[in-house]
Image: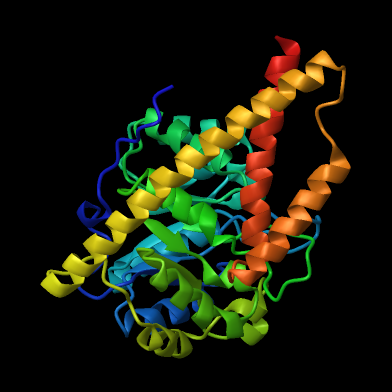
Amino acid sequence: MDRNLDIIPVSKWGFFDESIPPLVIAGPCSAESELQVMMTAKGLHEFGIHVYRAGIWKPRTHPGSFEGVGTQGLKWLRKVKEEFGMKVCTEVASEKHVFECIKYGIDMVWIGARTTANPFLVQEIADALQDTDIPVLVKNPVNPDIDLWIGALERLNRAGVKKLGVIHRGFSTSEKIPYRNNPLWQFAVELRTRYPELPVFADPSHMGGARKYVQPLSQRAMDLGFDGLMVESHCDPSCALSDASQQLVPEDLRKMLESLTVRRKSTDDKEYNDSIGQLRTQIDVIDENLLELLKSRMDISKKIGGFKKAHNIAIVQASRWDSILSSMIGKGREYGLSEEFVTAVFTAIHEASVDAQNKILEG
């Protein structure tokens, strides 16, 4: 299957002032009234925000919650375009939403986490966007499934959408963590590694769920080399109808953005490039040695699989695996490696070994 994406660089969208990184999309969680939409837009426009966001249709868990003002809110966004010259965007979850956005001249749309998880809806949206030039940002699915995320991008790209980007808003979790959603940054980093041309935005508002986390999560995104941020901003968060605790007033958003240290993606500094080149060469050698060691380990695992088959022994020996993992976690601590990292690495190795032995048993 062809996994390539045909993408138009974000620099050619005509949406952002790239001379002042990061790329920023800001606005209220929900469009609540014309006054609220316009006041927030005015505050953001005054310090140079070019792309304005507002939820028009809000997917809520329980009926009876505020589910957005609907189509009338698109008229308010159109007014933002006319008065402030800002680009405007909103979330879509059906072909009807797409057609309404086209009708009212919405410049860009995004697909929410719940919709990304539903290939039927993504395909419906992709079909509705065919033959348009509207950029589309895709939020990560609710659960950590990178293939589902990529699949949504592929559906849109096959429908002719070439102005594509992603929004990393973290993943739902039942664990007790400080944030509303678990960042699991590695998924966005992996996506960026596979598709270097894909613009990646972080959504620190939904990731953190509280104003106090917006700055540190935004800085983390900058440290990882993300292209931009989608941040929720409201002229008066105290009376917001949705997600009041995570929205910043425009002035606080300005201060937050000014506090960020934006990392460069490259430099012409010879000393840096020479040093980083030498270190990367060392990593390349170590990686080759790791692959050789992993092959040797897998060869032994296959031999073990042969012995188990000859003696009618079950492949998985739970007690031994528990003992190995516990031992490796302990040794990992001695080397300054986290339990999470060691567990992930050895679980992957164990699963590959089990799979190899299964094939021998079935052969």
